[in-house]
Image (cartoon, rainbow, N blue to C red; front, side, top):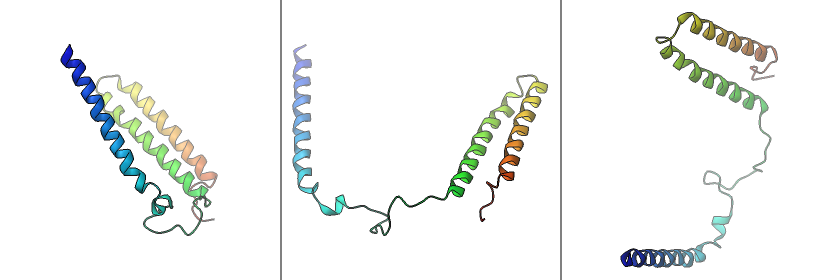
Length: 117
């Protein structure tokens, strides 16, 4: 029991010494002007970071993400078809693909997939 207490106290003392040394060492470099300035690929930023974002790019990225997730959902269906009724899975897959095609058609009609106006 006595060794556990000594080891705990020793670990706390070593931790406090290391933390205080790190604090003393970092104080000299924390006020450095280069570290407080913005960094952008090794160059000073020429414009504001709050520049307008292309909504068209955002919509296509979301569309890609949705189809990527849908493919990840469909892949296990192929593996589980061995263990269950095939007619149920075929209806499920067809319904899922029909919903995807209807969604894609709707996005196409709304002009989401047109990159240039």
